Amino acid sequence: MKFSAAVIGTGRIGYLLQKDKKREQPASHAAALAKSRHISLIAGCDINTERLMLWKKDYPRTACYGSAQELMQKEKPDLVVVAVSEDAHTEVALDVIKHKPKLIILEKPVGPNLAAAEQIRKAAARYKVPICVNHERRFSLDYLAAAQLIRNKELGDLQTVSGRLWSSSPIWTPSCAEKGDCSLIHDGTHLIDILHFLLEQHLKKPTVDRIVKNKRSEIRLLNLHYKLSKNGLLCLELNGNSEIFDFEITFNGTRGKLIIGNGYLKLYTKAPSPYYSGFSSLKRRKKVRRPRITGYFSRMVENCVDFLLDKAPLISPLSEGIRTLKALYEIVEYL
View 1 (cartoon, helix red, strand yellow):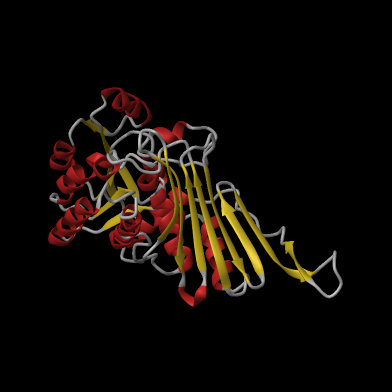
View 2: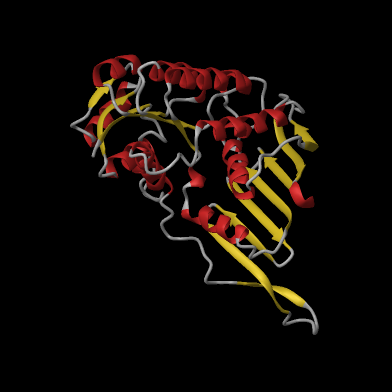
């Protein structure tokens, strides 16, 4: 059985990243959909005509549109990807929902703010349209391996968790609430969501430890922490003054340590110390490593197909995307 699919927004995540030779492929919605034997990619949509011309070269059999509404009226696809910029999410998502596709894949975050996310939630409930939010790490084999190690108690009982997100973008500016154009909303959604997934709990009531602003009142450094269930502690550092992009989470337990980040997965567990008699130290288990192919995009599409075939629930439903946005805006309350 095949489902027809369309991509609205042929920018980076919608289409262009499949041209990045350094990235694991497929690295775009278009490429992942085209790869699936259950999907027929029928249309692309963008207000940028140059992007559509590039799209047409790679997908000559698809129709091209400059308007999401026109695409939905003429093509009536089963599956629709909404991969437009954050400030356009709400308008486009609401237009698509009204046409009642069988499933929408919505790029993260759900919206630039909670009011926008609530509009989408209400419309999706009214028209009975399911939505998958593309929090890609939930589908990635390295993060799934990390989840299994934690749940199998390879680290013992978790005691501390630390997360780090470094980039060159401001953590927060006043315009972010409308446009979502800051690191906290754009990248922080990945950090908070994967912590929800790995810790199997939703983060609430953060304590902000440090805020550093520049002369333009942009927040460039933010430290905060959460108390976890079972007496654990989670500490986060968001740095918007970095020349590198860094995304890393470290889990410390009574019997081991796990570190996962962009391109690596490392596990250290308890072993007799080579340095001190009668003591235990951490020893790296070299057989535990990041898979060469994580399948983060392909596995997301596979889950969506399984959902459409009534074989599995959505791994990243709208409800989880909204919980993540709520956690981000709990942080914003302190800024």
